[in-house]
Image (cartoon, rainbow, N blue to C red):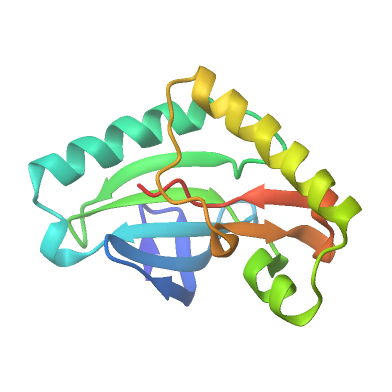
Length: 154
């Protein structure tokens, strides 16, 4: 399936209370992306749509290496559901890393500084994280100094 004449869905990565997240690819430039699609039952809920669109608009303006890059918000005409396209981050979820190999004190301090710096940028832009958890942080290359917040609880 191709969304917005631009993004091919490759694989379902996960499902949450608001939507499904897929790994995808931009068919025009080959860039890997993550695509969040609102669940069908919520696709016409005005409150949900308003929140989703408002926050995605703000999140697209945020630029920090510890925060996933948001690219496009659209309502795909074929499936009639809102979609949010963002940078795909390859890596290990923080929760998985914590279970298999607990962080050292130095790693915890590095991680906290990095995430706090990213959250400060988000807060200055008026975005409050609604769901910060180890599963919403990806460690690129398995390293805490490359941690990225991938979901803001939209």
